[in-house]
Image 1 (cartoon, rainbow, N blue to C red):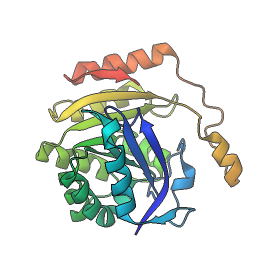
Image 2: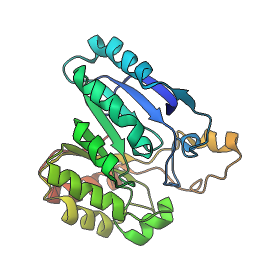
Image 3: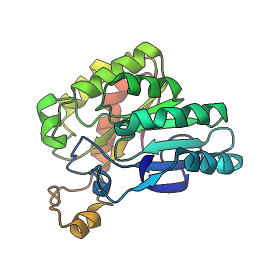
Length: 243
């Protein structure tokens, strides 16, 4: 059984084309700006779900996916349930469904490596390149995230790199430069997405009785987003977009 928090049909943000998005329960990170804090606790209000149920949903929706769409596993952190997802990914591959894995790279294991092998496109979320700032932001080291990037590069697995630009948290030019120098030569990175900071999940914190620690953080200015894009473009040869 898999622990699934929720679904989004016909999503257009989590990978190419129209997608069925499956939000898995459980995550080792504690990101200060997490938009889905209700998916963090592995014992949260998730539904125990038979993998066959997800397979049927994906196959039934396949006519709507077109040539580019498919299914995306997000969360939470889907690799938290890597072992349980492997048989489902194998069945999805056999059914010809394009698979995206939206991951923060926090978990490194043989099961996750196998999951990567079965995935068509990895959406790799790098929260911060600076290790101290990363720990302040997520409560965890970024060493596994960077190791995940290296492993995906070694496999030649297609990656979209995602970076949330949070004013005062992850917008320092030196940190973005360091990220570009470290990952910019990885030719398997097909796209870089700079994601503006948003507060769409803040209402969940109040409902859960949690303190949202970035309540005083302003939204990005167009100039901040453009500067981050320019820095990334100096290091990456793939398209760099503000999404």
